[in-house]
Length: 348
Image (tube, rainbow, N blue to C red; front, top):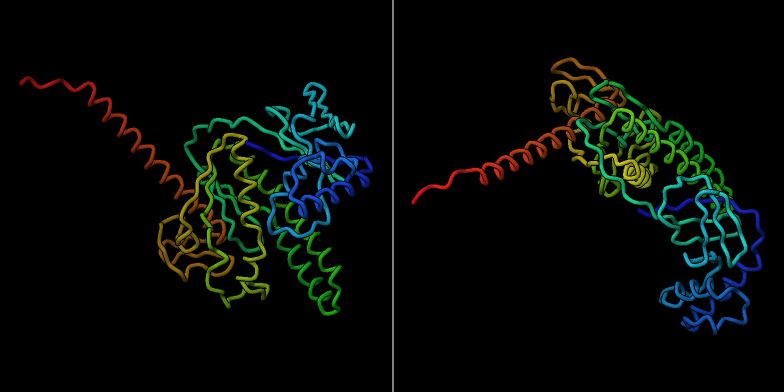
């Protein structure tokens, strides 16, 4: 597994980055891959080779405005005991605080402010689990709702993201009316960074809950959710449901949960999202009218719950059923194989 960590450096690399842009433009124009051809720019050949390799083969790229300095493994020295990384060709030293159990540093990309360190980790074996926590991402007012069928506990995570989207939606509307394009771009970037941070914290919390309860994680397979027919229905704030769905970073949160679960050896499964919001988590009745915005009320058994919590319990139950079936099947297959080897031979 390869993970990338970001560390802030305190070096002025404006001159080196300017040379990197010139080399990238040269590579796009001439398609050269030899560092001898760009020796006159004065950048270290180790970095120049990486830039030439990247940009000389790009057919659709016509121009470039910013280029990172890429340093391969050969130009990096790591002292894991001192938690120190040295970038030899830039004469730069970095103290790191991320997990120290990486196998090696593959490469480091450097821009004006940060170093992006690509580390290779050994995959952890999956732990054996007897249950799953359900994670509902198609929620109202939160990024995710987590339910544990064993303890009955429900965690509602990432509420700040909902308010952040609403806040920046109003700011964008105001700036659009004034035609402030530069500020719009800046605001959009700021919003994405805030949501990314919330997704990181949410995914970390989900994996921690799974670790504490020694459970796997069950998610809905939400492929194609953005391609569904647009809905005219609105939520309690008056915002269209389709608009709020499109504002959530489903895939970003999913990838964060995936790699964090993999690091900890937590099993991750995907279930069919069909009827998870319409099914009663107590009696299993499926009725479209049972869900009324935030609340779920079963017309059969009278069960009342938060709609997203009810869906999260259903997701966990579906994962458990699939796990139990696959586990029972594997046991049955093993018994058949053992029986076939031990079966007495018939005399002929």
